[in-house]
Length: 502
Picture 1: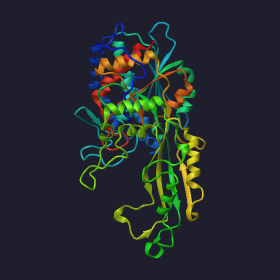
Picture 2 (picture 1 turned 90 degrees about the horizontal axis):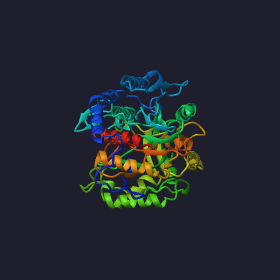
Picture 3 (picture 1 turned 135 degrees about the vertical axis):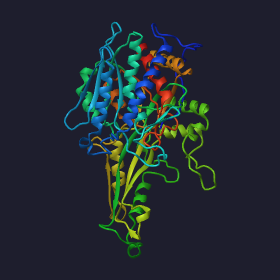
């Protein structure tokens, strides 16, 4: 999911040993965070994984099922049970909207009027298939430091790690800024309720100077990684109808055009099927020179690891199947700054075991179109709908229904603002303190709609976007896991950055 890059836009201090903040013992911080994960976070996340709290897009009856409410209740109860001095928590609900958890901790730093906002989410992607025989999406299993199951890494751990980071600072009586937490429950559905809650809670959020988003990825498990960009996304259902019911293929084929063939023609307007290149220029943007330089620097470091990390199948000649490119730089740019189409679901096709000789009346694909960070999501969705629906072959009924509310289709990507020297230095020191390696920089191929919303709402805020989704962690797919040792070190790093907030 994450693009692996490493690039330092400014020269950071060369340190043989990490600098220490006044009153902060890094070794003690590591010990306290490790104990928190071993004793409290891993058991709590195991219980969380066992609950199929699927996002509303994948469970339209989420209210009746009560599973989202359950994980929210469990998380809120866990936080309140920690009895962190000064911390207050509220579960905010409004009508039929998904709930959010809001917590608040006053500053202990003198003259600190600014706020650190910590973000995460508790809703999950659906099961998917292909899980290892001894694993399952709702069956937590800790094996070799990996906690398997849906949602632990993406990103149910966030609220528990954030509160544990705060506790570790409190244990050393280290001064910290005001900290608030916002944990939503419809991120995997595009964060449709989040703008409402951001507006509702705007006064309570305060003067946000730093956003810590824990819903991102890591290039490897050896250092702290900062996300520098995110792609946008358009999802929706493309359907081609040619008949009102299925008919005998021997009787109709050759006369009645195949709905699948029509769908292929429609997609040919969008994508070059030989290369995967998106054809309309509206879905592309110019790649900034700094981001291209990051990809080049990463390619020099990663080499073939830029593409070999994926679970390639066995090819026709007995070797492995191949990527679109084995050029490391191009591989990195393809995953973060170029638009890409994926078909993630199919309807109108029977399973192979029940597929008779019938010409089907319709074919429907679920499309996922990843957009470059600088392409506006809704306008791109409008352009995509027109491109797919206009001038249908054979006058077939072709419809594309984007996901999301009408007038708010698609999610825009995000390109990080310039990094403040204090934050860059603080993250690098935290990485050296807890990983023994310098800070790395990554672009992300996925989408976090929150980031654009927060960037617009708090244009002066710095963004620390990071997460535990490293190589092979496979969020959204089978065998998703959370790399527990990385989660521990990331939690300690977040605590150290909070303490370094000016």
